[in-house]
Length: 242
Ligand code: 2M8
Ligand code: MG
Ligand code: MG
Image (cartoon, rainbow, N blue to C red; front, side, top):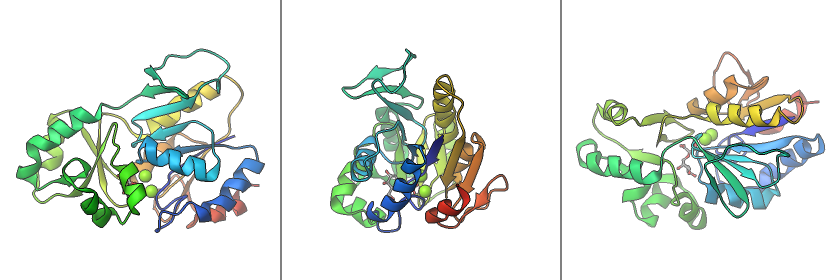
């Protein structure tokens, strides 16, 4: 069994604390789930939550931009983009430098604020993240988050540059041509070579819909999407999963 979890406003609440998530994570572990974070957050942020919740499964960063698979998690070889000390990484998005360069070129025209042109203090103000987590969010590898934009035509300008914008819980995020569904599907394809998989997903944002589409049991938290069951808060999973 595999469950894909969005983080902000799904597993993690308004205050970004991992504490309240412990109970539901324990519940899922007891039932043998692989718990796969599938979030707009960076690797650095996700490693913080993985440590806090003692999760060692694969994870998907920056809105489907890269899949991190712990070394030796799969009993066979598969194609990957690069190797890190603890992970094999499959990249589906584009490098942050490409996104930053594009945004820097058009930031004045569209009144853009994003991590790459904000100070730590500004990031804290826009996101309400605690300082330490704000620093981890600033470690972008594949995407940017748009805090403000003022004039129309921004989306079209991004399309022209072969970039994509999609909405998360609070903000819009710019990535390459990928989404949370492509990355989730990739993991399902890999792990179903080991055994038959029953797949679940929970999300609250527009950018979670592609992920909800590729699983057997999609759940939403206050998001209206016809294919999924709305459970309103993550702990309600304990009632719908036996
Ligand atoms: C961004 O992600 C959220 C989650 O959906 C959003 O787009 O609204 C990302 O920048 C993420 O790295 C960061 O932790 C979060 C802070 O609210 O915002
Ligand atoms: Mg969310
Ligand atoms: Mg998200």
